[in-house]
Length: 94
Image (cartoon, rainbow, N blue to C red; front, side, top):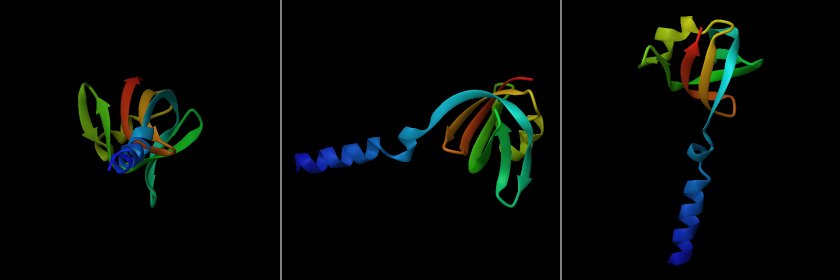
């Protein structure tokens, strides 16, 4: 039974949720929308927003389509990401 508990714990710790990290950067290409969803380029790397992603602006969290127009080149942002998927984005400065 202890071995099973250890295996379950290891699986939980290695899940994708544990791999989500925050990083800072600068928008290098304005956000756009295509068949793949809402996308943005930060520090020359293209990312896609997951369907449940939110944008923090003016101390409030908003849905991506409502604030995507703010994501223009030279906007400083902080992104919570895993690979090339963004789960949350905070606008730090424009």
